[in-house]
Image (cartoon, rainbow, N blue to C red):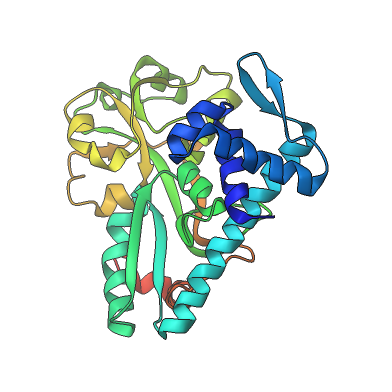
Length: 300
């Protein structure tokens, strides 16, 4: 089996159209047809079947697509490992960090890492935990720093911080003008992260547990920590890490809406893919976080 044929197969399977695949791969349709024929001959079965003007995978094709992704990921990891070994360098680190943690953790952590290994290279990705997990599982990132992943058997996590997420509002928000209960939060609109983010899921479930409707989202944003000025000047509510509220540089105009039902306790950790390749530099970064993460946070 030719690895190029497998790569062509994955593109064709993804697009479901030979012509579009040929255009994307800059190959002719006859060349791609021959590529598929070689794969089908090697496996002794059909991989595609016609579906109108499109083509779709047979059950065997679906199996090959799943196995092919794992194989390509393994090949990419092997290439990185061989390059690191051959060049004698400590390697490259691709790390993703939740937006709520990036401001407080990355400056000190990366500074300490560069002092330890001056020749490393870093790729830093800031994002919401749902997208970071997808990138970790697909092999695009070596590690992620976000809320611990408890239910994913493909990921290993190490705890580095216990924190809380809380409801916040402007100091001048009308909710503070009199005693309030959780149902009073339903009178206002919110700035919240997308539905796939763990903190958003938890908040929606917290309202459901009290038989209340989910928060009315007026603004959906992938980085709430970038919007304190907006929250401070409106009657919008939001949900952020308590550390961000207490230690953030521009959070002085916000105030916690103190309710036990909307206080989310969570564990932040560094997560890696089980069996995934980590360069010596990446291994060192994980070790630093496991052994002394507290010293790298901005409030330390």
